[in-house]
Structure formats: structure tokens, C-alpha cells
Length: 451
Ligand SMILES: [Zn+2]
Ligand SMILES: [Zn+2]
Image (cartoon, rainbow, N blue to C red; front, side, top):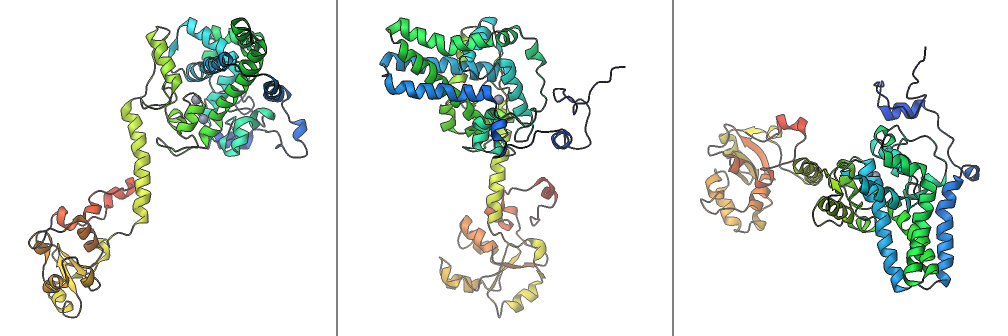
């Protein structure tokens, strides 16, 4: 009888059985990994094909650029072809095949598969497999470009050295059945050569007789430029910027990385809402890939552009804002809680007020001994109200005090009057700075507000 291997025995198998602890830590603990790369073994651990792809074009390109003047036509072609092949990666490899963010017609699929080959980052099948694992196991050792291993590692280190372990399993059954993905995988090498070198060179050569410039600038250096631009999605986009939608993991939003990566720099949004065809969620955010897909839809080449509900996006945004507000709230000093204050009778208050500068406002007894000189209305008004109930005087009877004054008054609480405030309302009892406050879910039942 054939026994199906467990996911520990076969890292490609997607686990359906639950493990006794967290799936990632369980797998990392039980699955074999290669020994770490060290100073003594690094040369044996190099991935030579990747080293070749990542080192030869920049070396030849830089040497070539030294002796090849950049003509204006070729410079324009460099920019256009960078974008075209870049879209193959961002709109094709990434948003279409990895994330299924929209549906493309066969024509568009072939165009993107061919253009994407011009960036020489492997076939769609290989690339999307790794990127799905990146999303599923972000920031763990099952993430092929784990950002916690450093900026250089997540940029190119993960390709330069043989991976220490297989990326965590991810479902790619849809891609295995996709004829365009299969076709591109089968013809990948000739496609990559034609798109990366032959086409950019020929266009410049036949177009304006700049064969050498086309090869060096639009071929080699354009290839290096687009490769590193997309590598930045794994490195810089997990390192530079802020986290407006969730702060659990490393992905960040940043306009600089958005410009470098053709719109993929809103990476915090993208990791939260990966199936959204946009990375720049707001209309003004720089995301040419989003505009490209929007145009494809208008041209009838793309349909079913997926967007996440605004309500849920804003919920994420609010959660992060509330967390930040809570942190700020915790750095400030707040008035004593009702439960921490001694309860004092009216008679007791009267007696104590003979020797201390005590004023009763809204049911609270305040010690204003250190405040006479600082009172904007002068000390005499304070002195006049010592030992009295100054609630009405404070709230407009004599003068309608500012919110800041009310906040400060609350800091001077030393006791609470037995029987509470005769004119107590939330407005008077709770200082303005505490009308709203950020409370954890567990704190809501006992918010500590005086009733
Ligand atoms: Zn990422
Ligand atoms: Zn992604």
C-alpha cells in the first residue's frame, strides 16, 4: 500500500493536517536544513548559474558603457524598454500569476510572459512559486527572501548562495495547468536571450543604427537596472518607509521605493491586500503598474480587476493609528482614578480646607496650593473659593474655563466628595482630554471613568 509522505518528508506538499504547534516553527524544528554559509564554506555554497546571471551583465555593461556613448534615441529606448519588461514582471509575474489580481486575455498573457522573460529572473512558474511562499511565510525561514536576514540577503544574497532550505509549500496548481506559464517555462532560455539581448539590440540597430549602444545600454544595463529595481521589492520595500495598514511584519510603504519599483513600493498595503490589483491604493500614489492594468482593462485586454473593500482597508489603517495614539497616551500623565482617591465628607473637607488650599469642583477635591501664582485669573478668585463648591463658578458661573484649564484642574485631585457631585455630568466630571481614550479590549469593561 502506498503511504502518502508527510509534509515534513516532502517540502512541496501542502499540509492539510494541523500540527501540534505553529506550522512554521514545527516545520523549522523538524525539517533538515543545510548548514549555514560561513567564511570557510561559502565558495562551495555559491549558486553558479545565479552568480553568472547577476555578475556578467553588469560587468560587461559597465565596461561597454565606458566606450559606448549613449545616444538620445537609445536613452529613450532604454526608458521605454525598461518599463515594458518591468511591466512583464510587475503586472505579469507578480500581480497576475502570483496573486491572480485580475484576469488577462490570452493575448495579454503572452505579451506579459514574453516581456517578463526579458528581465531574466527565471520562469513564471519558478518565480511565482517563491513569491507565494514569501507571502505565506513572510519574515520566517520558510520565506525564501526573509527580510530578517538583512538587506543584502533579501536583495541578492538569497540567489547568490544555494538556499539553506526549500521555501515553505505554496499552492501553484493553477500555474501548473496554465498553458502560457507552461509554454514560457519550456522556451524560457531562448525567450530570455531574445527579449533581454536580441530585441533591444536590434531595435536600436535597425532603428537608428546604434547596434553597440542598443546592446550595452538597452540590453545589458537595462537588464541590470530592471533586475535590481525588482529585487528592491524584496529588500528595500521591507526596510524603508512606514506601516500604515499593519505593523506585524516588515513590509513597508514608501514613495521612494514605489518610484524605484514601478509602483510596488506600497508594500505594506500589498502584503495586507495581495489580491488587490493596486499597490498604490490611493489614487495619487505612484503606481504605473496600476495605471497600466487600468488601461489594459479599458482596451479589453484585462478584466475582473480585484480591489479590496475600502471599509476593510480603512479598518487596517485605523488600527495602526489607534496603536500609535495609545503609545502616545501612555507617555502622558493622567489624573488620579476615582478608585485611588480617598472619599471625604463635606465636613471633613471644610475642616481640612482651613489648613490647605482645597477646592471642590464637580465632586472632586483639588489641592491648588501650588497654583495661586499661575492662575491666569489671579490668586484672589482661587482664595475666595477655598472650602466651597466652586463647580458653577468654574463652569461659567464666574468664568467659562478652557479645556486646558479643566485638564490641569483634574491633575490636582486629592479626594472625592462623599455623595459625589450635585451637578455631575460627564462634561464636568471628565476632563476634555479623557472624553475619548484608547482602551484595550480587556480594559473596556472597567474603563475607570468616574460614573
Ligand atoms: Zn514582500
Ligand atoms: Zn506580492
